[in-house]
Image 1 (cartoon, rainbow, N blue to C red):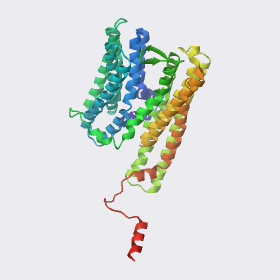
Image 2: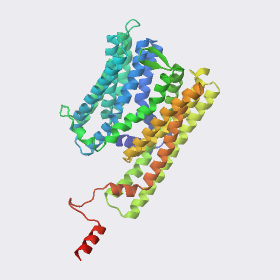
Image 3: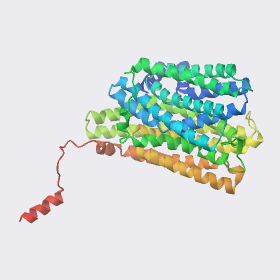
Image 4: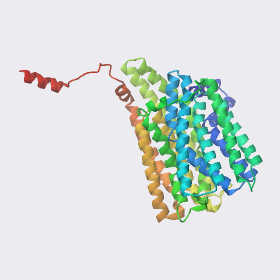
Length: 472
């Protein structure tokens, strides 16, 4: 997102409180805009318009969960592939390849939904509308990755605003308490319009050959880790919810196959909202301060500077990285501590005494999750894919194991504890791995280079010595 960094640097260089605040607001919009817009539009639908139909509520929650987890199999790989095509200036290949990935994603989603509804029978109208909404959201996530790659950030946010607006209008206009099909399809149609805007943005900026290609499949062998990085992260994020939903003490089943836990879901949703400061600070420091030192270091490697100059730039990059991480952590900790105190004093709106204990652990967990995500993205920034995948699998296993143990043995007061422990462990270990890798980045980058030697047969020195002795 070099275009984002250019805009932010330009704002900060102007000086003045107003431009600094504008840069911060711009970072909020970039990092959390789609999330904020989607949340507000759903709040308007559910609270202001008072649409409380159980079929609609279930369809909304589960379609977001399923579409996000399934998209995890594709979006990390998609991001990497688009980056490669942009670097190679092969812009017209982007849409055809994204369409190819989208086709596979939709087929995977359809297969999953067929199996799900095979074991959980429902009326045909609900099966159709729910499946359509899942596929609509899945399409949005995948197309929007191509849209944000254009660096047309303003239009990217506009696409989500359009989506939110039409989702509200269509849901309210097409549905009624006796017609939940209209609610679900209305929201899906709003998503479709937003997706179309994202597609047009990509088309205008990149152009296309107007076909679907599967050339990207050749790169799977090279970037196979990316397929599982997104999937395992989203699964690690949701696994404690699934286990709580299916527990006999805290789970509810309003419809067959669809589980909830009101006592857990509501406070955890509020806790997730608190990570916006980390997302904002991450964009600010990554695209302004850190990227400068990162680029200087890699320019020195590419242009063949002498070793001492490369080491100096590596040290500067490492120092800047530590400072930026610490700055982001401090800001988020202040926000979390304030909210933690307000929760303890019963001063937070929408938080009853019943939610207080869960929110307490949820705030800590959300903070650690935000730090973990920052570390994981930085690992991917340096292309340490194996390490990112290892961390995700570890966090997934810890979160799932501890969720089962805590719910079975300790009950209500440990709801959210597994989430907090898992991401805290992942954060500390991930930070250690990241810093160790950056400290050895010169050696690592040289080892990554291909040797400029011809293919053939090579002998080790010991083998040559042995051959010489045999000839004697």
